[in-house]
Image (cartoon, rainbow, N blue to C red; front, side):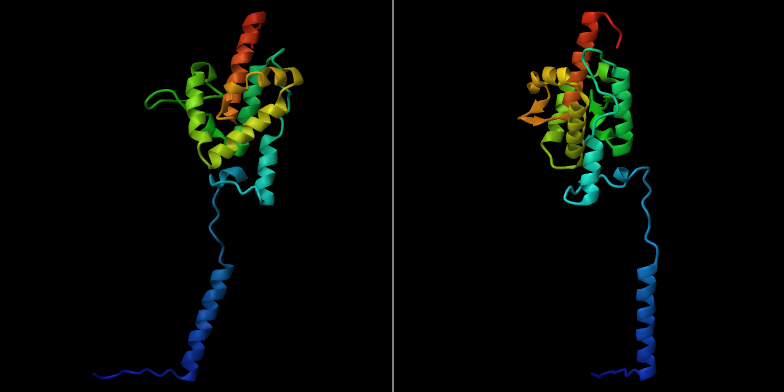
Length: 195
C-alpha cells in the first residue's frame, strides 16, 4: 500500500485561508431572502412569543377595543362585523373565522354568520381550545377584544351567559362573537328594528 502525502506550500495554504475568509465575509453580508407579508402577523403563522416585545405588542394591539363600543341596546352588527374584519386583516384571524358547515364546506363567520349554527362554531372552538397554537392565541385575542368593546350593560348580559362562550371554563372568542350576534338578533326582533 502506498501512502500519498500532499504538502502545501505556505503560499497555497495562505491562498486557501484567504479564500475561506472571503467566502465567510460574503455570506455574512449577503442579503437574506425576505418573506413578503402585508402585515407583520402574516409573516408567520407560528406561535407568537409573548415574552418578547414584538410578541406582546401584537397581543395588546390585537386585543384592544374596537373603535366603536358595541351595545345590545342599539346593536349595529354591520359596524361590529366591519371593525372585526379590519382586525382580521391586520392580525391574520381568517382561520378562526373559517367554520366548517358540511363535509367539505366552510363559511366565514363575519360574512355568513346567519348561516352558521352555534353548534358549528362550538365544534370549531373545541378544536382551537384543545391546542397550543396560533389559532388559540388569535381566538383569545378576539375574546379580549370583544370584551373590551362592549358597553357595561352588554357586558353584564353576556356574563350571565358564560356557558355559551366557554368550553371547560376556557373562553372562546368565536363563541363569544356568535353569542353576541344571537343576542343582537334577538334584541332586534324584540324591538322590530333592523340591525
